[in-house]
Length: 144
Image (cartoon, rainbow, N blue to C red; front, side, top):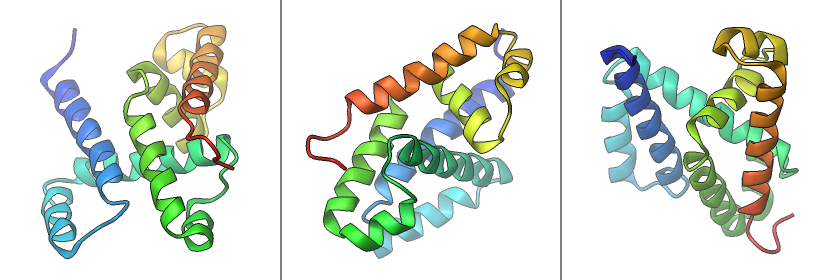
C-alpha cells in the first residue's frame, strides 16, 4: 500500500526527471522557474540530484562517456542526444529506474538491492538488463 509520502516522492521524482529533460537547453526564464521548483524542499533537491546521477549513469552505460565531456565536445548534437537520453530515462519502467538508481547512484550490490526491494538477485539483474536494452533501443540513429 502506497503512503502519501511515497506518492509525493514519486511525483517529485517524475518532476525532477522532467526538469532534467527541460534543462538541456535552458533559458533565463526556465532557470528562474527551476530555481523556484528546486527550492521547495530538500526532497526536490534530492530527487533532482538522483535524476542527474541516473542520467550520468545511463550515459556511461551506453558508452556516451561523462556528460560534461559530451556537452563540450559535441555542442548542439550533444544537447539533442542528452535530451533524448533524459526523455528515455523518464520513460523507463519505474522498477528499472529504481534499480538503476540504487546500483549506479548509491553503488549498492545486486544482493543489497534485492534485499532492499525484496526481490531475487536475478530479478534485479533482469531489471538492470531491461533498462540497458530499453535505453539502447531508443538511442538515436548515428549516436556514438
